[in-house]
Image 1 (cartoon, rainbow over the protein chains, first blue to last red):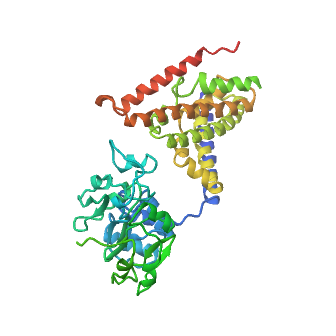
Image 2: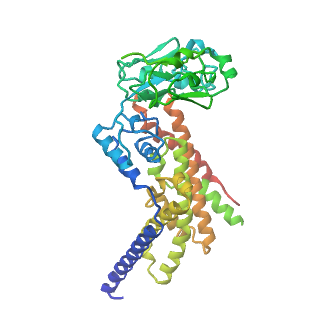
Image 3: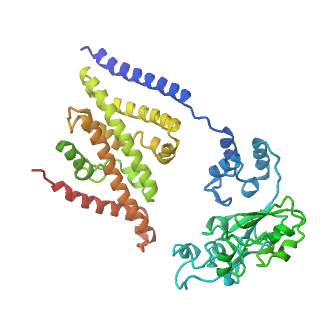
Length: 266
Length: 194
């Protein structure tokens, strides 16, 4: 075989193979393309990209997907700039409410909630959570072992009476505590809100009351007495529609368990 | 049938790809921090090795027939890379759940040395005359890889909370652990099927 041919055969073969594969992949990727919502990519590129988890989602991409689906609100993210939020709102086709949010702890049990066992030893909420889901009898009760306190960069959280309380004067609403709370008790509410539901237990009244003096028993008194009809019961727990709430405080007054609290002033 | 069993034991234990052939070390050390990501990587490797073994075996027949088997390595690289791209497109389209399970690992291992290794060893070392043996060897090699990476990931998860001397923390102790596992697997090289 002449030398020229010896070189030519591999060159031609590989070039031919490469072209065949290139065409095949190009055709297949067009033909079997998955229709994805390109808004997700657009929104994701506009988010801060900090992946801080402050929104409660796994990262900015997951948050973007939830935004497009309508499961999440833009106000849950504080790391994204206002200008970008406006652009995202444009992509999503809704007006940016531009509302700031604050973080509150949706549990007021603490010392009023009984313990399953006495924990003595090393660790914080995350390690206690590993032992039979925390030391509290309530499955969603604040463990009060200061995981959020130690993670908070603004030193805005204290354990008062065995339960985490956010000092709104210091809170920078970064959402770090939301990511670290093993019970996911720290939640965002609009900054304008004055009242919030400080219980997360969806069980029936009797089961809640056995464990906790401050647990929501789902009596619906708040919903029935709200003059604006802003409260609805969902899974035995009241939900405040902050769009309707006028901060009159009737719900907090009527609540027999005292689990509707006022936001600690700024 | 006994020969198939022999191939499996050989690929999984005796000549484990990671621990005795030292191929595919990059994902072995890179993706073994958590057991669930390690499992995802392992499954992707099993999948790719199985598919690649069959296709490259067929390609090799053509190469040998044309008398250009010296082009084996470079053609295999090309074929495997293209094949995985195609497979990814199909999996994404027809099985979103499998796609999200294999996730980023599928494209990551397109040009992995272990995958190329199994393709080449199928036609050189194993020298089988049967496409089924190639397939079995591919899948079994993938299983061997998965076992190795899962063992290491399990150990690394424990080591996260262990009290390790400062200068050994992280990568050094991981390499030490990998070495101990490899020594353990070296015991299999004494297996004989007389």
